[in-house]
Amino acid sequence: MLDDFFIRALIAGIGIALVTGPLGCFVVWRRLSYFGDTLSHSALLGVTIAYSMEFNIAVSIFLISSLIALILIHLQRKTNLPSDALLGLLAHSSLAVGLVVIGFLTFIRFDIMGLLFGDILAVDKNDLIIIWFGGGLILLVLKFIWKPLFASTVNYELAEAEGLNPDRAKAIFTILLAAIIAISIKLVGVLLITGLLIIPTAMARNISDTPQKMVVFSIIGGLLSVFIGLFSSLEFNTPSGPSIITAALLLFIISLLKIKQTIQLKN
Amino acid sequence: MSIEKNILVKLNNAGYKQNNKWLVEGVSFVIEKGKIVTLIGPNGSGKSTTAKIALGFYKGIEGQVEKFTNKIGYVPQKISIDWTLPLRVNDFMLLTDELSDDVVDEALKSTGVYHLKNKNLGNLSGGEFQRVLLARAISKKPELLVLDEPVQGVDFTGEIEMYELIKKISVNLNCGILLISHDLHTVMSATDYVVCLNGHVCCCGSPTEVAFNKEYKALFGEQASKTLTIYEHKHDHVHTTDGEIKKN
Image (cartoon, rainbow over all chains, first blue to last red; front, side):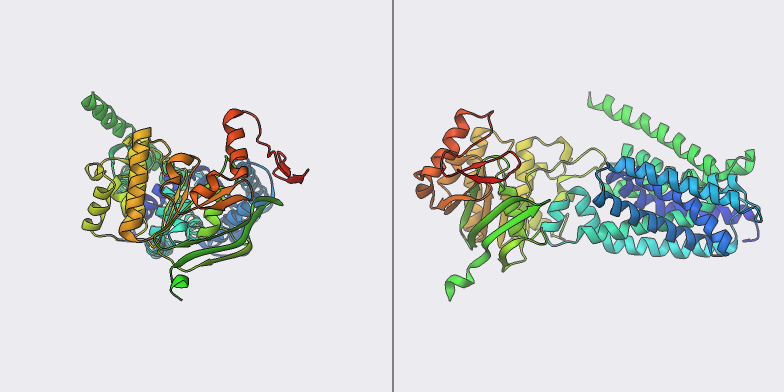
């Protein structure tokens, strides 16, 4: 069964959506959309390093993204630049450096489009192991830091005053974000992974009134996006990442109708 | 020593410096079980900073802070819940601790907001939200309660009710309370010890002692009449805009 590329892509997509759901909620709640973008742009650099040193791609992306996150925290402390400027600086320079390095690596054939937008054919059995094992690990760690992370998302000082450790939770969350980017890059691509974190969550927000519901709907939204996206990718021969994100966008638009209904009911 | 046992937090000449600028310095006071300590002072006088020093937020403070309890309830000065987080009052009550339904209900009832239990936090009025914050803080039966301007956004009658409620909490839970206020007259009747701050301790003592203190009169008398000008002491020193204190 696993010999069929489509089944592999589907299993990979399910594993990714299960993780992007809860992580995406925190990305939206904590206003980290651009932070996610910056980490994923730096992933390209991770890929090139993996190729040139014959290293595992996921591990390499994970390390580079974590490094970029550390550099960001350092720059935030040491410079007077606003965070969004620093995020832009790091996102574009790491993307640029990644592309320049690719230019130098003439001895390796690259599918840049595949890297940027995901490739349904690229997922092999090893990737499945990394996605499901890594994804499980991410969820397990998230479960452990849930309380301090969630409490400090609502109010940092409240969490700290009442004996939780918000800074540690934040640091660990950053690492988890780097990890999900690392394991989902092949299927979704560098440019669109943040979309999978944010769009199903945005849809979930439109139809939820508690944080728990928002996490559940966000997972369901992610799964539906992956199913619809991958089937249409197969059907219309479109790249997998954009297909998944387009499906997520459609779900988001449908969820807007629900808001409209609720407002009408209230009036 | 029974007196020593009742001490929850002790600040001795404590202060905090950020970017080489003193936010507050030379603060000493003790919070005991069942007592209310009130911090007053104009905006930017270091009231919240002092509370955070007492809570142990900062690393690298000057002076000594000794904390003898970890059961702390906190009502921060500013808290904004935005629309991205759908949070009901009940979810908010369980934010930092697992509490049974009974405990949550009891706390909400004691501050008079039980009927809001399943309402979204974003739909509460300012006064309702302050009561929910207070309910959350007392639900864990804290030994120390730190309330940073708990009556903001509450109208005048509600304000008196809130202060009565705080007094009741201090009796019922026998907890120490550190109350921050810019509103003097209502607080002072219910409080045991007042610290008047303006970057440093201007004066302190029982409410009546402080009310008749010359520096206190100077601080708030001037402030009320010239609300738009930068406050200047009329005694031995002036506060410059960058926070430094210059002797005359």
